[in-house]
Structure formats: C-alpha cells, structure tokens
Image 1: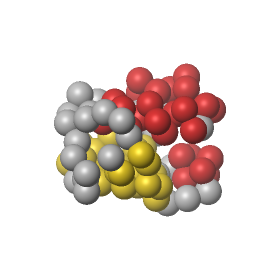
Image 2: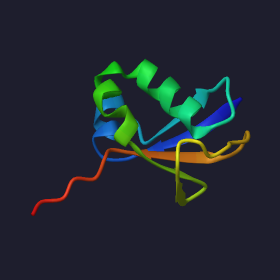
Image 3: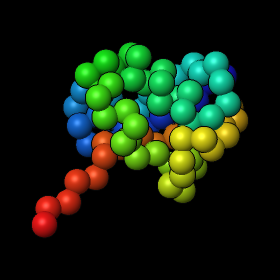
Length: 81
C-alpha cells in the first residue's frame, strides 16, 4: 500500500524532502519505519528511537495503518539537563 510520510528535523536534511510516498508491504507503522530506514541506512542506529505519529496523533510502532494515512517520522528528542 502507498503511505504518505512527512519528515522533520535531520530526516528532511538526509532526504532533501519534506514528504515521501512509500510503498509498504505490511500494516503497521513499524513496516513504514523499516522501509524508510532501508532507503536511508544512515538512520539505522536510531531506528528504535524514531518518533512517529499517524494522522497527526503521536503513536507507537505497532499501530495499524491503512492506505491514505499520513505518517510523520521525526528524529528522537534529546533534552539537556
């Protein structure tokens, strides 16, 4: 299925794009993240820390997706002390 993916932070810098359309063979956000990381291997080390949302609501990797959903992928948030 085709999924629209919005990118933020350094992921925009890495891809040079604000949005992508990914073809995903699976029905969870985890499948979307895996396709994204496969296309951009520099992100592999932080894969499990990526922040995701579905249709503008933060969620987890096991959230199910449907064609037409918009997934947002953001770098992990780091705070200083």
